[in-house]
Length: 102
Image (cartoon, rainbow, N blue to C red; front, side, top):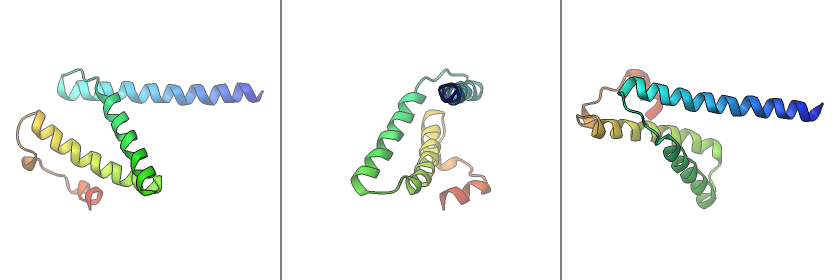
């Protein structure tokens, strides 16, 4: 019985990850019209940098996740400005985003 529950929980977790990846592809394609398969590379880079910071500086993973989210927000704004036209300085930041950066 415990093997069944472990397999069930593992299957639901893996299915949830697949659903999130598929949702990411759909959101990117619907918003830009470009099929972008670089999500895996970006996630791998973020995981490597987080692991490296945790091992090098001894930072707890809880504090690194908040910094990682802020860095991803800033990187995404800079990247979208340089790739999709316009400068990143011309992006309008909604007022709700100011709580994430500060």
